[in-house]
Length: 159
Image (cartoon, rainbow, N blue to C red; front, side, top):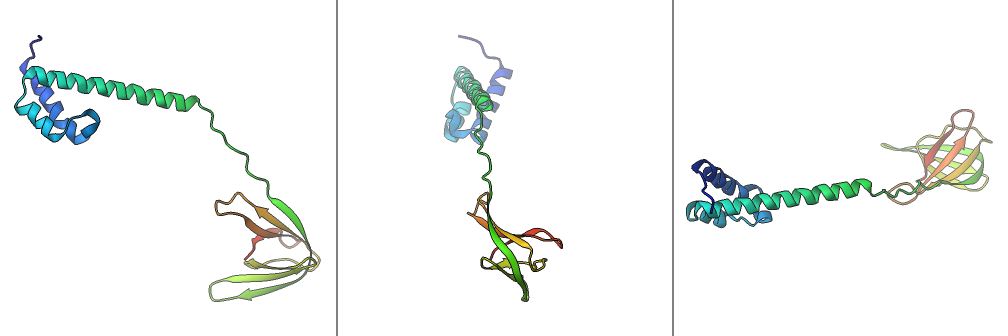
């Protein structure tokens, strides 16, 4: 049996008193158990409890460090972003701007169909248009009408 000094016993009491506040059930020291150890147990029992507490702390630290090391060396699989699908939408025949109180939209008539897009389109009759479908969005597919123009080449989201 080892002799425990007053200073060491005081440090053990402080560690036991703080353990339920920060670590609780991880180290098996509830408030009631801590109270019993501080006021009713012997110095040797407190020292044994602190020894177990420190042993568990070291084992958990080693387990966390091992886990982090393993995670560091496991390669992360990342898929390349999908390539947007581009379909020809023909030549622009007419462009009509529609303004509302809080939004602007444009109707673009091409040789293959009619498209309603968000915002104002800058183009001239005869410019080429393509329909782009992008699946990189987290909300499904994002479709847009891309206009190649001498005025301004840009893509406009479909409504």
